[in-house]
Image (tube, rainbow, N blue to C red; front, side):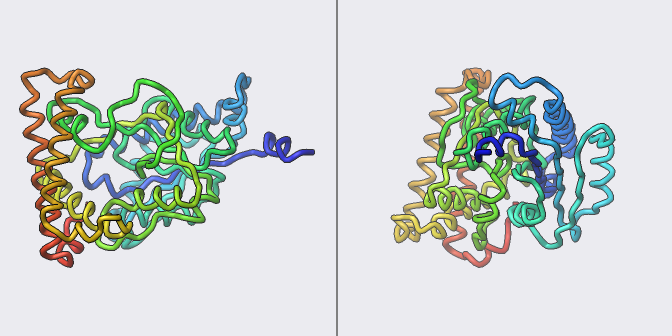
Length: 348
């Protein structure tokens, strides 16, 4: 029997790892909506084992026999019994072929929770899903189906801001997440978002999220760089779509912007940027501020129809993002002045 023949009959298992940290920043309703969608999509996946496959992707998906759902949380800050009640309320595990695991990870934060879960995962494939994103229908199937191609090692998603009001529309157009994709293509990219990404287990076990001292975010960017340097291709399946919330309230708006400015500066120091010496010079921060605000304004004007933003609301959207990036600039400047203070504060 050839290797390919053995590969087609081997049953597969997927581990879905959910951090329960972002719940502190978003509305609990989003987390419940995420769990409801996940439950329905796991049922779709397990139902495929009894269906008739009409494509290589469907044949591949039909091999998934078990799903492991792991919820990671810092039990020093969050009561695990509360999470258990929420999961029990939303996910009806009695009709799903899944194993639910609630794992305390004391003292660990966002990326550390993901690494902690991956080390204990039993699946052939690992899917990272954040507690504040809401998958669209078919997200899980599209994400896993990409692995039917043996060359695919890492698959990201199309994560976008749900443009529900003026505030959200401003972030949908002016923040770092792309707009909701209309196509459903699978293509190579140089990045991924940690809130929805899948790995072959052996690939993630070899690399994992690195530690970037003093930052809250950015480890996914460093990991993407490392994967690319080692010849591991990163793909994005635009059919695997999820909505992400904008910063939740004024406090989160301020802290997120300050932390993002700090993380940008420290991230480029960690990755050894070619112009690393210039990063220490204050004019570089003002140059970056000008770039961010200009890019946001241009996107708002050019793409406003994509989120149904009226022309009359354009100045308001530009103002929101300008204030955000002004705070971002302050985060960069404060990090230059007192890196030790900024590394200890503004956790997101």
